[in-house]
Every structure is written in structure tokens, then in C-alpha cells.
Length: 356
Image (tube, rainbow, N blue to C red):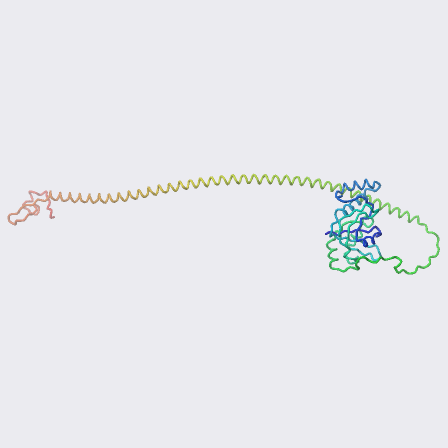
């Protein structure tokens, strides 16, 4: 929550009303209703038309304070009102009501309800930069936000107020003063030089205010330019986002196509695998057939070898039968081969004896 500074007039003329009525008021000549006045340029036009004699600097100041008081202050925010009495205390409270406009009043038309529950605090309780901010622009700024809100709340949370509110009003007559000595009558003093110096100072102040007004105007113009640049940047970012979205879509579509191709390749590979499996089965059948043929061939060869052996044996027997001649020997009554009997060798010398 923010911490606001609200002066009770340049000299604290409305302090009692602030405390007694438990409200803060926007002091000044802005008498129009500020409800929903959020646009700074529009508010400046309205105030300038309402108060045509006000200089531009005053219009800017009145507009910024009025807009902040009516549209920026929230319930729960804190408010500090500097006391202009001898103690120079700081009255601290919490905003409890929304912006109110009372058109029946001749002054103090703009207000917020406040609970002064934090009491009155001495200035030395706060850091120097906070006091400098409180005293800044005391000649023309009656309402603005303090940037040290966190530290202010920490100090109030840990510390102890000088006094609760409301305070007893301090009368000037109640302040103990030394008795004034009688002043001797003297000749009147010539204050013309002093008046001239005051006039020079007032002129310088006027020039400073004019310069501040011009600076504010230039800042407003620069801010408008910055806003335009920011709008352009937002447009460019929007285009970049659209481009990125299109690229993503295209990438997704390409990925889908790639997935389709991969699926087709896998299907083809599966088909090839099935064909290869069929080929393997055929090859295995061929191998089995060859094995069976080899076995049959071996068996047949074995049979053939047996037949050949039998044929060879038969041939050998036939040859032996042809080459063997048996003769009866009268003396020994034995059948002998002619080769075994020398007597018959010459007759059948080409034959061989079966027994040998």
C-alpha cells in the first residue's frame, strides 16, 4: 500500500478539520467533480477551461494532484499530514474511505475518510531523506506520493508515537514567552531596498516556476513520444509472435509429413522382412530337399556299390569256373588242376589253378 503526503494548507490552516472530522481534503481551487478523471490530458483541458487565468504550470500541478487524490488513493493506503505547530509533528493515519465530492460546500469539496490510528510522530524518528521528501515542494505541492513507503511503515511498526490523535490544540497565547522589553521609538526605517530585493526574489521564483512548467510540458511530450515508440515496439512484437506461430505450424506440418514417410518406410521394411522370411523358408525347404537327395543318393550309391560287388563276385566265380579244369588221375584217383599236374601243363598251360 502507498504512503501519501497531504498538507492541511500551506500554513496548516485546516489541521483541526483534518483531525476532528477524520478526513483529508484536497486543498486548492479545483472545484469540479474528479470522479473517474483518469486521463491527464483531458483533466488538464477541463481545469484550464475552468480556470483560464491560471498559468500553465499551475494547471499541470493542479491536474496531477487532483488526479492522484481522486483516482490513485486506495482504501488501506497511509497518509502523512505535517503539523505546522511548534513541535512540527507528523500526523499519520490510514485511508478508510473512497474519494468523495461534496458540491454543496464552498471549500474542501474533495475528501477521503481517515483513521488517525498511528498518532503523531516526531520528525527525528524518521530518516533525513524522508523528512526532505516531506518538506519538499511545500510552497505549491499539497498532495503527492512518498517513495519511502516501506521504510516509513517499518519505522512506525517498530517505534512509538509521540502522542495519539487528536492533539489538544496549541494556542499561541499559551506558549511561554519572555516579557518583551519596551521598544524605544526610533525613526522609520527605509525598506525600499528590501522591497526591491523581495521583488527580485519573486521574479526569480516566477522564472523558476515557468522553467519547471516548460520542463514538465517537454517531459509530457517526451512521454507521449515514448508511448508511441512503445506502441510501435508492441506492434513489432506482435508481428514477431505471429511469425513464430506460423513457423511453429509449418514445422509441425513438416514433422507430420516426416512421420508419415517414416511410417511408410517402416511398412515397406516390414513387407520386405516378410518377403525375406518367406525366402528363408523356401531356402530352408531347398536345403532339406538337397539333404534328402544327398541321403538318397548315398543310399543308392551304397546299394549300387553292393550290386557292383555282387557282380564282381559273380564275374570272379564265372572266371574261376572257366579257368578251372578238373582231371581224373588214374594213379592217385584225385581231381587236380592241370596246372598242378605237370603232365597236363602243356595242354592247358594258359589256364590257372583255382586252388592257387
